[in-house]
Image (cartoon, rainbow, N blue to C red; front, side, top):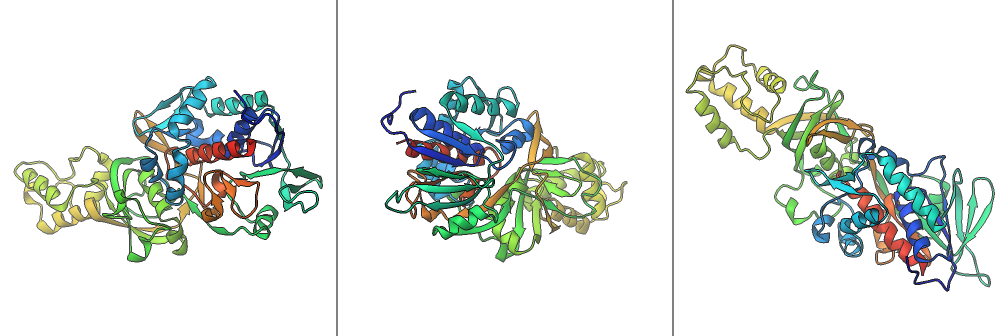
Amino acid sequence: MTSHAQNSAPSIAIIGGGAAGYFAAITAAELNPSANVTIYEASKRTLAKVKISGGGRCNVTHNCFDPKELATRYPRGSRELRGAFHRWQPQDTIQWFSERGVQLKAEPDGRMFPSTDDSQTIIDCFHQAAQAAGVKLRKECAVKSLSTLHAPRSTHSFSLQLNNGEQIEAERVLIATGSLKASPLTRALESLGHSIAPLAPSLFAFNLSDKRTHGLAGLSVQNASVSVVGASLVKTAEPLPASHKSKPQAQTGPILITHRGLSGPAILRLSAWQARALQEENYHFEIEINWLGDMTENQVREQFMRLRKGKTQVKTKIFEQIPRRFWERLVETVGIADEQKWAQLPKDKETALIQELIAGRFSVQGKTTNNNDVKYSHGKIIGSTTEFVTAGGICRKEIDFRTMESKIIPNLYFAGECIDIDGITGGFNFQACWTGGRIAGLAMAE
């Protein structure tokens, strides 16, 4: 790769060996081979989230190639990312991996994975690219403090203190630590003048105990609509995209019944859009589910009216997308006997069944953040694995998204989950890491 900055040899410290940190380090080192680029990772392992993403397959990105549309997948950060995606978007990510021998494939829902279906493919690619570019890696090296060096030495360089007491100097620093939980480094950033938006879990499953779902773990409905009940909970951190204006709290997609409650893409998206509001409610709230997606009461009544002309029992499954056992549970819930036929079904029972189908109310009593990344088989949801995202972090208004540089401290950069940016499930969070890491890497290499 041709360098545009070979006459300078900046020392670049990347704090965090995750997705954004590696992408930035490789970008800077490839663009400027003279740069001294070092990744400082606090733990024994790098790219840990890449490893577990997508059930171990790594949901690298999403095949949404329109920057404006892509930006609508981010509950926080959509406005800032719209411009950033014009500089680096999923098509660029796909090409970047392809040039390094890694082919990505798209699934029916748009999520993209390595053709090997193995996250280790992505990890190996990063390790090889970093090594080839001359990026140094120091594991178990947590940065305890960060401060600027004062004149006459430099007003634009930094001193980093590691957990082993070692002092490091760097001309440019990228913060790519992931979620900015309380730590000495977080306090150091605040002392430098940065403010941190409150942290809140995002992309989590809902815990509930309800007879309608008890014992049905593993069953899923592929196209349901779910919303939060209560005006106080439809607020979001920033204006929603136009596609959400009609009913901003509603999310449509697969819902999975789990041992603890409900998960699946529709639930996870709702948790992302309402992350802070649900946190304020201490994760005790009510949801409403239309198990038939966008079907209305009149449409359901018309279908029931046709069934009344035959001799079919009500408990016989009639909606293809609703699993038989779940249909039978809903029928039982409203007090319809097993032998009851449609022709003799009382109107009040019919109304109660319609209510369960298109406006069922469920009381949520907590969240689960270790069962929220969804497994699929032949395009259908079949289970969950581990992964979660945190909303909150460095305030976006303090970052120049043209370079990812701090507006407060020159030569200090940010990328990844440490910023108050997060996306819904589907590869969008990693794409934000690639985009932010790429832009920061380009800027630091100059």
